[in-house]
Image (cartoon, rainbow, N blue to C red):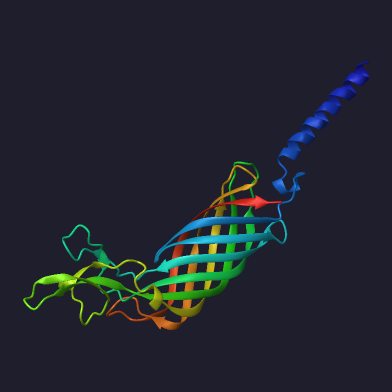
Length: 251
């Protein structure tokens, strides 16, 4: 009886020890259904403006994924500063001296590698992401609402006109025109981009993605872009970005 009791105690101890060891096994070694792809959408804050991002990932191995990346961002000049051109409360702020607005539509591919995986459900996973591809520059001219005067020099009304630094000075600008003004005059400037970031994924649910990504990106265009008057044109636009994303994982 004592021998059987000893064997029973030994068996319980072995099961307990195995369970403790199993609980410390990384998540990929447990008997879980394999996730095949991921998709997430995020907002982007970068040193030249704002944007949105969509990424789709497919697993190559457990720690490596191929990426399809789509970004839409605006690129501002570092000397932009919004001011009021009129004391009228209905007037919109504008950037004095801004000739063109620049937007970038990025479409590219890349890779993602996990460098530190979650060892528990409420842990943090760290991955390195990079992508590269086409950056389609959309150069839209700036339109302003400007005062028009009659023969006596009195204000006769307000006209929507494309900004011309030779004709539009600080004292005859009423305010910024609508965003859609100049949309049909937008020109396409082809280019390329590269993005490299470190991602921190902290979701407590296996099928959900909550992440922050911090990194560097650069856009280069075929033709130089002039954003501000009296400033050099540029083909190359580097920036630091922070992206906050939510998404889903699929089996």
